[in-house]
Length: 284
Ligand SMILES: Cc1ncc(C[n+]2csc(CCOP(=O)(O)OP(=O)(O)O)c2C)c(N)n1
Ligand SMILES: O=c1ccn([C@@H]2O[C@H](COP(=O)(O)O)[C@@H](O)[C@H]2O)c(=O)[nH]1
Image (cartoon, rainbow, N blue to C red; front, top):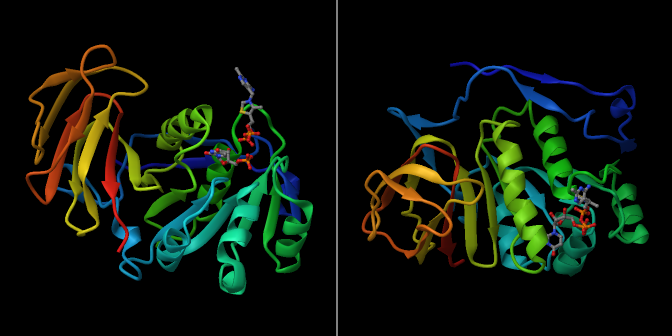
């Protein structure tokens, strides 16, 4: 089934220097069905850790959020990225993290309500011709707004196959729930997968239907989980896990699959509702 998107942009969104966009400006409506980028038979195929192998892929749109950044993680994902977006205070974190190598790590855009980024840092990136977009709306997080913009900016780049978000795990619990909620919003913004990857954990929201998850990069830690955050999933079946589910229900107060592990290089998950997949990784 095909997918057609309508993107409504305001007049001023064509100004490349300093832009201000609202939620309405960035609304992207999905009109027909759900198509996935890569399928095997009737299964969607996800490779959550492919962006952690330097140079293994060059299909990432990277989004950096405002948490302390691990230099090696930035370098690994950056080397796999075609487009790099930074959300508000993450501009300070990026500059601080890359120190002497800053010249090599200039993003394509920075967006936010700019209540966190230091003005001198934004000026530094402005002078390097980084696109700066102000998103003052206070009904969505800077991450959601940044993701909307990144998706719009990369719409014509067919090579982009995944959105990878770093600086997204740890710290404030409300932010972490908001970041997971953004994965729900993303389901209707793009057919491509959005991975949260930070501090040894990766997560993505599985769409209803069947998904094959490749877990053979050698970077996988020995734990994984299926978290029914958002709603109960009444029918979940899995293969490739030590504790598999056979048309079972997952729900808070009922059953949540944590501290699970692998018996195979591939995991399959069939679910009737969106379901959060999470797994551990270790960088080499
Ligand atoms: C029901 C409701 N609760 C809370 C808010 C407030 N709110 C939601 S998203 C948002 C913007 C958050 O900005 P961001 O920079 O992502 O996070 P910060 O670091 O400022 O907390 C705000 C203020 C709201 N608009 N509606
Ligand atoms: O502890 C945190 C702080 C921030 N985030 C995410 O980063 C963006 C941008 O944050 P600002 O504070 O506006 O600079 C925010 O929308 C959160 O998604 C976070 O995850 N954890």
